[in-house]
Amino acid sequence: MQDAHLNLIDGMWLPGDHLIQNRNPSDQSDLIGHYAAGTASDVDRAAQAASAALPDWQAKGPLARAELLDRIARRIDEEAAVIGRMLAREEGKILPEAIAEVRRAAQVFRFFAGEALRLPGEAIASVRPGVDVEVMREAVGVVGLITPWNFPAAIPAWKIAPALAYGNAVVLKPAELVPGTAHLLARIIHEEGCPPGIFNLVMGPGSVVGQAMVEHPLIVAISFTGSVPTGRAIARAAALGMKRVQLEMGGKNPMVVMDDADLDTAVAACLNGAFFSTGQRCTASSRLIVQSGIHDAFVERLTKEMLALRVGPALAEDSQIGPVVSVAQLQVNLDYVALARTEGCEVIGGERLNGPTDGFFQRPALFLNASNRMRISREEIFGPCAAVIRVGDFDEALEVANDSEFGLSAGICTNSLTYARAFRHRVRAGMVMVNLPTAGVDFHVPFGGTKGSSFGPREQGRHAVEFYTTVKTAYCFAG
Ligand code: ADP
Image 1 (cartoon, rainbow, N blue to C red):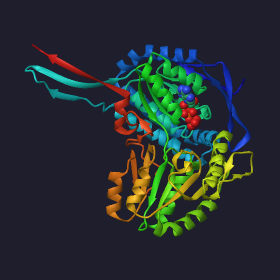
Image 2 (cartoon, helix red, strand yellow):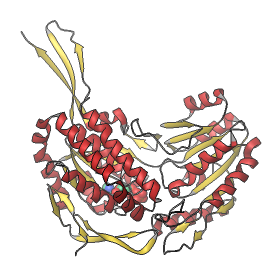
Image 3 (tube, rainbow, N blue to C red):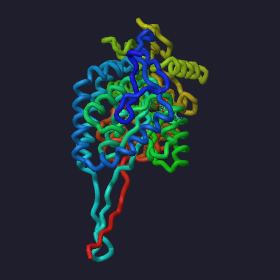
Image 4 (spheres, rainbow, N blue to C red):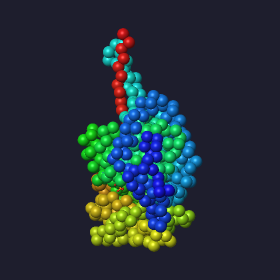
């Protein structure tokens, strides 16, 4: 087939055992292309090649790796418009957001180009005379990266870049819904001179390719971003193989709005945090916890601005919110909208919309008069839906914010230094925002959560070294 996009294994473009169609969620008549679906034997071939290529790769030293990552960053920037268009087409994010995500991927590669030259270590005095002790960091080996559909450029980038920077070899499996962006990234990595076997792309179903990666004895570490059930299954399987794992899973992120908040700031933060990118961010604000004094004014303004958001095709110039990623996810969202009514909320928006094209469009939704006990306040929806929970004071707001099995991101809108400080210290989340949306993070600092949201060392920034390297303690006695 002419438009067949193949897997990259050992520096060669190879077919899997069948092809998967990639279609545009803004317009189902738009067939983006056919992508190879790999098998367990493709994973085996990639892992063997990666393992065999490692010694030469590590012998090249950090400068070669830094230069490679820098070249990749430059190429991603040069091709940002093309990659961004692919991303918008296959994932549904509006084009400006898609291009911004691609630029962020370039920034991540550039950041880790620098980090490759700053591999940390320590010299510590020995307790024994004449002995020197050095604590060194070394690559882990062959790492398996399993990524979700909601950030098809940024998430692969923030896993691939540190993996390569610290001298590992990679097998990447992108989500089935978004192979196109990963394929463009793979082509760049390959063409910019990554040695054969050091970076492998194996596309295909999670239950086949993903599972084979988790079970493969040569893949010694798995970094995964995705849903809670899959994350848990990977953790169990990885434990059997004694692999290290890093899991980024769900969120049910609280955004507290205090009576003293600036209303413009609070509405803007909630509108962005809850609905931008169609709410398809694990850091999206899905519980708006609002103090009673500001509640009605806040709800009135947010409702007005939410209903004014223009929902439409990702590539249309005037769209502010793109489609839901798939018909299956749209159905999940619509079921939660119905559940919100059953649980007693007043629902604003949330209905399926007819767009100019055959896409999965949905009006963003607010679930008013929600309580934190309802399922719509406890389960991650992963769509443009937010519950509004009314509270009396700061202590109640904090208690509600913390009453969740998740702990990824949390925010507060307030002008009180006292509340802001107390919230930063007492909220149980990996990331905390004051007067900012819960979503939207810097690319050079740690990303991750507490409780059921994350497991293992943090991603991004200098903290990525924890997962992608292992420590060796070297003793030396010169006689
Ligand atoms: P979502 O519901 O958002 O698609 P998933 O957790 O199902 O989240 O998917 C995230 C990634 O995990 C995808 O790349 C998917 O193919 C992969 N995946 C799904 N099931 C498995 C599995 N059993 N083992 C390994 N990876 C899997």
